[in-house]
Image (cartoon, rainbow, N blue to C red; front, side, top):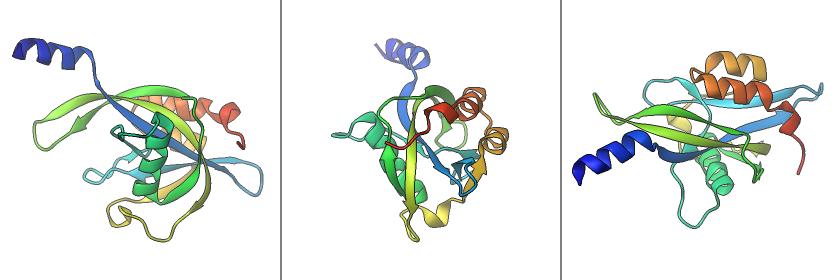
Length: 151
């Protein structure tokens, strides 16, 4: 039984939901927001575990609010997924699959839950893609432009 659970976890990664926050600048260019991870300070999108009672895109929006203070409209259709290894301390990690939902940002709060733990930055899609390490996430960021529209 234990071995079956281990094999299942290796073959089927844990599910997470992420938001790709975006806005249009005054000159008409698309900007996306990245956040740093708390421990290693790597650039990433806001993401997290499913939240009971919320739809996947709503869970993604909640993560963006908690990690970056963002408020906006989360599109219900995913723009793709990527996988990464989530670390739980020295030597312990699990494989996760993250479904990504565009989040049209209306505004960012001055104070939010994880403000002291993370840095946030608005970037061009090209610059944002150059800062993330997951190849699938790079492709999502670079290909998201046609899917970013007002609700």
